[in-house]
Length: 131
Ligand code: CMP
Image (tube, rainbow, N blue to C red; front, side, top):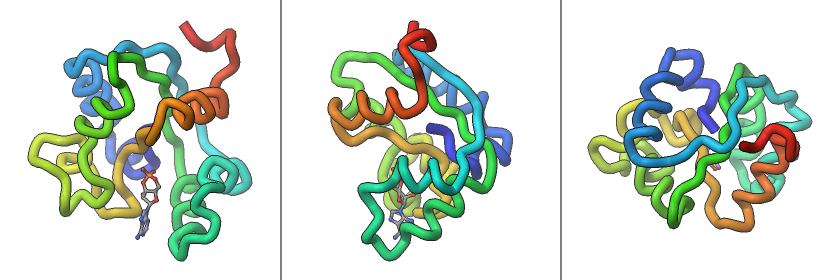
């Protein structure tokens, strides 16, 4: 996902270019705005965390770009490309180092396992929308 901060700041193109250059294939993609209910559902795993309310509010505050990406070892490769959750700890050249504002407004989300990637992909896309 490209998060509301990066969309509002005009970074969709820069982020997609970096994803393309890193060799990911785009299987599905769309721009949409999540309701608070849907953002809460997407991040339900973090329900008990102190930042959950702030996260849900932020993720429903503007448009996002959702995408399914394919590459060998995609989960790990994408996490390398985006950098650490907190941009203060992200490596130079990573997407979060370049575009994220803070740990909460951190420009992009990447799935943390193949299993969650499948769940998250199915959250946003039907079979007809995957190529
Ligand atoms: P993401 O990869 O989308 O997965 C969960 C998100 O929770 C994470 O990126 C951060 O944006 C957010 N998050 C994690 N820790 C904090 C925190 N301490 N304060 C605010 N948001 C956080």
